[in-house]
Length: 133
Ligand code: ZN
Image (tube, rainbow, N blue to C red; front, side, top):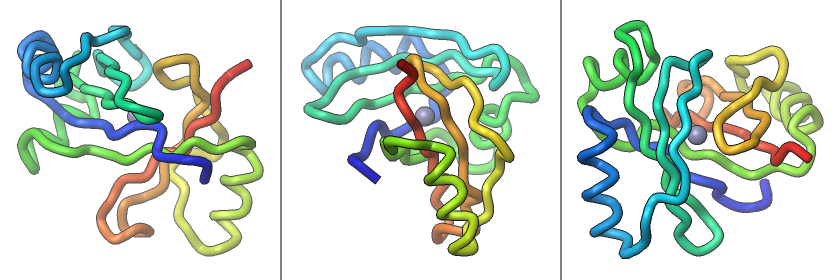
C-alpha cells in the first residue's frame, strides 16, 4: 500500500455535504462524478496527499443507501493507493483476505478499484485503487 488515497464518507445530501466540507477543509471540491455502476454520486476534495470522497446514493439499491439505512451517515471506506491492483488482489487473497470483486472495476476519479470484505479487516471496508494510465 503506497498511501491512503482517500476516505469515503456516506452522506444523505451531496450538495449540503459539499458545502460543509468546503468550510471544514478550507478547500473547494475539485470534482463531482456519478458512478452509475455503483449507484453513487461522488465529490472529491484534495487534502495533502490524500482525498475525501463524499458519496450520496443515486438509487435505493445503492450500497450507500443500504449503509446509511443501517448505520447512518459516516465513514464508509478507506481507500489505499496501490501500484499494481491485480498483484495486490492476488497477494491479499493468498493471505486470506476476502475480496468482494474477482477483477478490478472502474471506479470514480480515473481509478481501477476493488474492495475487501469488512469482516476481513475488523469491520472496515477497504478499497484498493490504482490510477489508470
Ligand atoms: Zn472510494
